[in-house]
Length: 176
Image 1 (tube, rainbow, N blue to C red):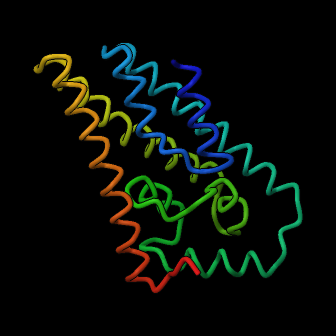
Image 2: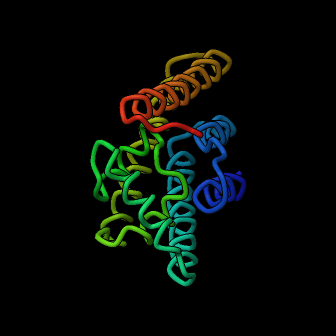
């Protein structure tokens, strides 16, 4: 289960979005203990660090055309914050796909500062999800806890999509 969660988070950070929230919680439901939840959280953080760092390294070692850099710079300036803190907000409203590439492309972003926000965001988001799920399993029957946990995760996913949609509309960003 830990390897599965690791791979999902790695793929999410490096290749394409995978809804890691759902896999994280399915992993927790598999063994709903705080100790296992902390292991899942550690695996998620490590996978994110490896995924973001790998994508950062790849982009650092290829030539990114100036036109792409300009598009990325304009895009980042549309967001609520245009520095590394955007990666923290990205946990709530995912607006920065392939963040490792963004970290590399944006000239005034520092890798260490960006990674700090990636790690803090991962710990806060998935730690909160784990604690809420743990609460459900402590105070409800196993079936009810599973249902409440899955509903909780779906609410988080829907809220993230809604926040992204609203932010895109306010910024004038389209998917065209």
